[in-house]
Image (cartoon, rainbow, N blue to C red; front, top):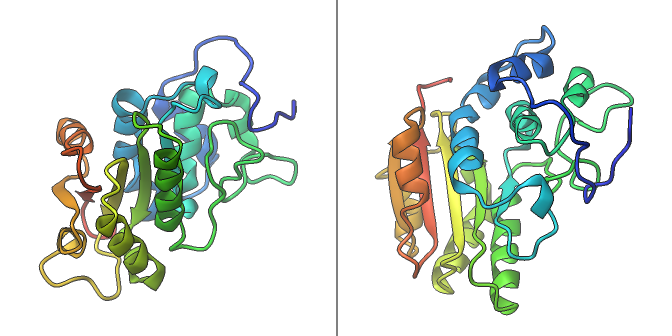
Amino acid sequence: MTIMSATTRAPEGDPPAPFGSLLERVRAGREFGPNVYSTLDVLRVLYDRVLRITPETVDDPDRDRFLLSKGHAVAGYYAVLAAKGFVPVDWLDDQGGPDSLLGEHPDRLLVPGVEIGSGSLGHGLGLGVGTALGLRAQGLTTPRVYVLLGDAELDEGSNHEAIAYAGAVRLANLTAVVIDNDSASHGWHGGIATRFTVNGWTAATVDGRDHDALYDALTGQDGNRPHVVVAVVREGE
């Protein structure tokens, strides 16, 4: 296996196979749970239609940033990164193996295109707030920061602080995407979106399988406040 740093582009070669076959290479006969399948449509819409980042611009200060807070759902993320040319397709065949760079959670130091290493749930949104603040402090007004998290992550108190702070300082370059597969222990009165809007965010709740609805929601920021997209999928999916 050729070892590459996170700032090294994947080698050029034949175009990657279709996404479905790439996901099967990651799966390698294993069973995926709802944590993986619930994220696939959001990931594809983000990388196909929304994010301004390519293998050639992984170090460009003006790139968009995508942070996978729901790190245990990494299989679909790896398939998308391979489909887009960030990592070689043959890396997928040994995902999680002893010599693989593709661990059970993504590592930004090992995998090109990965912005954060994620493990314990509840940290991604706070890191997204910090990233958005850093971009604003540098006067970089074009890049957006997208953070993908699960509904159960919102049970973590660190997210309450991140939501409240981002709303208070009007981090207009931040978008949170919450996968709602009804796995949270506590929930929120009035629905997930209300815990953001009460803190000054804009919000859209859409079918998490409808690509056009996801695209409209992911690009529906008002330019003045942070934005959240709640992507609803079937319970347990």
